[in-house]
Image (cartoon, rainbow over all chains, first blue to last red; front, top):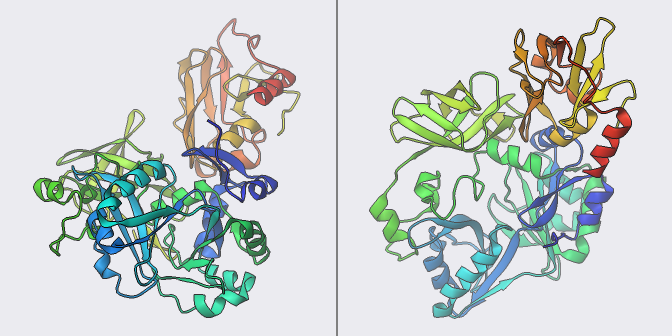
Length: 361
Length: 127
């Protein structure tokens, strides 16, 4: 099967990006040095083509009831138009089908953003559930998504598009709004880096011009390599690594995205209540040389665990990882990670290493 | 991409320079550092060990992946470039100016199995 291309594909090639296959999409890995791209986001502003992600409009007759059944968090929390909520949709055994962000666009109109690699199965699942609620599921075609992230990201977006300032500047964290006259450009104060910034959804035809204007405004192009080290430092989950259809959100540090307070029959609830939490989800900071990767054994006083993601942290200058460990293991404990054929000491931390440019561990 | 003509190359992307005293100086090629991306670790060198051609002599790790660096002929690892311990990224900026380890070849070991620059360049471009 040939790889899919986003509207920005030619722009990436022209900038000399190293391209890789990511879930069936040919995407930029880096434009030279992924570490420099990483630092640009922590210290200034960087941008990512995330057009491979799938925006899905949810409306129709009872979209809210549908979403209350579909996802583990409660959309009742969306009390103001434009508000966003992070959560997961689960299967009947409580495993994660995908993680997602849902925006309330006012009235009976919602938008859900799902992952690229899972989009096909997600949409099939959503359509199956939607029938009972007469909800309409419409994946957006011909749109591009650009994430602009970093302490200077918002200012640089307004420098490139001064006309978006009026509607964009008042947006609080985890809020989104249409910022153009036609309502085609959606600016959301969300991201996947632990820095401030916007995720911009816009018509595909406007993407190349915006990308070059942002570049002109001093925003650095960043690839998937930097995106991964940034999200790892921020302690954000990657679908397929931290969770999948056999992993409970409670074992992946996503307990805060599961709302069991209200009496609400969301899919997977029974399984979560029966099983409870089996693993503690933590961060690891390596105390010696080497680089942790995913699926490495973690030896603890309470038994074995496993890393789910690992890499080198450009901000901290050491290797960090996310891991599932026995419930008795706590932040501050020392453990050993099996890196190739060696055991290397690591410190257990909270699963969040860097926020707003500052080290937390 | 740079392929200096005075060096020999392996199909696992090491470069090899034969010194006047018969010892070998080994590093990784420009193509190798480009494939790996930003290097963040270089070490675990088996200094003092006698190895067989193709055995792991040390490890380089980038943000993306770990990769073994292999001894290009039978011989003993006599030295590791300790400068790379703290500054592995020097390999990215100058892969041929920053050697990784030195080898004293075993008696009778030859460089016959290695590629010259032209064949190596052709093999990289064909990949």
